[in-house]
Image (cartoon, rainbow, N blue to C red; front, side):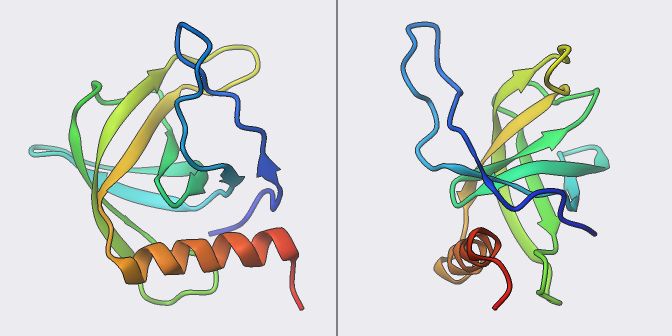
Length: 128
């Protein structure tokens, strides 16, 4: 597992009316994430994460509304984070962006949310 970037991405996801959809700023992060639906198991990579969810790069995104069980390791943590989320948007590949899906966390414990926030803060500040 490796980190490809430690800077916050600009918040640029808007709906058809130009209104912002994302509630939390993203931090670029590349880690392997295993996720499963009712009948399939997948292993892909995240592109970015925030306390509300993450983006999974995949050529075969699941349909919007699909519930997924996620399991991944945050940098510097030995214990995997496991949670439930759902697909809230899907993107086809473009010249600038890879195909994939945005996952919103549905069941994230306060402890896991704190772990994500701590990791994001440490990436933004850098090693001490």
